[in-house]
Image 1: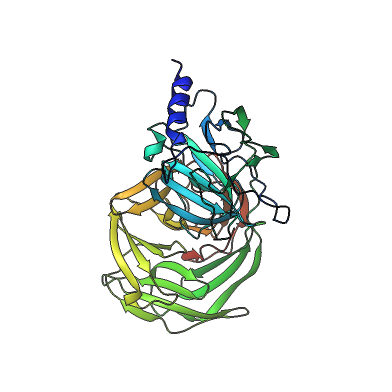
Image 2: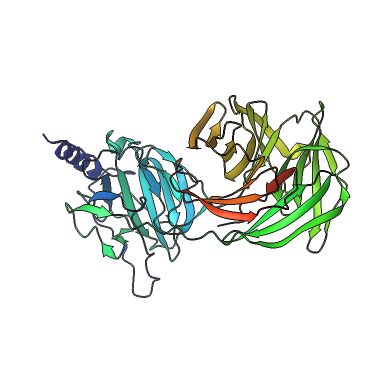
Length: 442
C-alpha cells in the first residue's frame, strides 16, 4: 500500500473517534450569524512558501495537514500563528497530546493538536508568523502518525472559548488566504501554499540602560523600526559607587546589578526618571553570592545568570524585588561558555562566544534545554548583546559602535532569516555594560 494511502486509512479510523468523548465526528453546529464580527484573516499556519496537503477525512470542517509532496518533514515542522491573537490554552491533553488554542478576537479561535512541542504559554500575545510550536504525533488519537489537526472555532455560547475536537463542537469552516476549506467530509486539497509571508518591521522603542567607566548610568531610546536614536544618551550625575560586573533590566524603572568581587554582591537600582535627566536612588544591596559574569531578564518572570559556564535560572516575583522575591535558583546546566547574554523572550536566551558563534537557547528546566547555533563566525567582536523583543538584536563593540539586526522568527532555531539592519551609531557608545528593557518591541 502506498505510504500516504496507509496514513489516510489510519487517520480516518482514528479521528472519527472524538477527542473528549466517544462518538462519530460531524460538522460543527456553531454557525456565526450575520451580526457577528468577520472571521480573522488567516494564512496557513506554516512558514512562507511551504506546501501542505489538507484533508477533512470524516471530521469536516476540521482539517488534518501533512507536508507535501510525500509527508516528509511533517514531524517537527515549524508551526506559526496564522493571525494575531492571544494564547488561551496551551497544555497536554490525554487524547489530543500537546495542544494550543489562540483567541483572534470577534469570538474566533484557532486550535492546534498533536504537537511535538509548544513554544507559547497562556497569555502570550502572538503576531502572524510568530512561532508557536512544532507539528508532531502526540496524543492517542494521532495514532503515532505526524500531522497537524487544525480547527477554527466560533464561540457561539459566549463562554470565552471555542469547544473543539468532538461532534457538535463549535468548529467552523476556515478560510486561508481568501480560500475556504472544510466544506464536507472526505475532501482533499493538494499543494496548498502558505502565504504566511508577512514579516512586518518591528515596532516600538528599545529602552537601553548602560554604565559608563566612571560608574554613571545612561539611558538611550532607539526606534526599533528605523534604528535611529530618539532620546539620549541621558547621563546621570551620580555614580553607582562600586564597580559593576553584570546588569539586567527588569522594567523601565528597575535594574539589577552585580558588583565585582569575590562576595558577588547583588544590588537593585531604582530609576526615578529618564526624561531630561537620569536620577536613581541609592542602590539597594540585596545579598551576596551572585558571582555571575552575565545577567539577563526575559521580561516575564525569569532571571538568567551565567558564572563560568554554568547557567542558572531564578524566578522574580516583584517589580522592585527584595531578595525574598528572587527565588528558584535552578541550575539549568553547564557548557554555557558565553561572552555576551541577552533574553529574546520568555525562557529564550541568546549569546555570543569568543569564537564568534551566535547561539540561541530555549530553556525548559533543570538539565533540559534546546541549543540552536544561528551563526558560526563574526560575532566575537561584540562585548554586549541586547534584545528588546520581536527578534530585534543590538550588538555593541568596544570601539563604541552599536549595530542592529532582525531575526524574522527568533524562536525557530534557524539563522537564515537573521539580517543585518545597519548601524545605529558608529561611535559614541562608551558604556562598559549595556542592557535593554525586554518586551518593549513587537
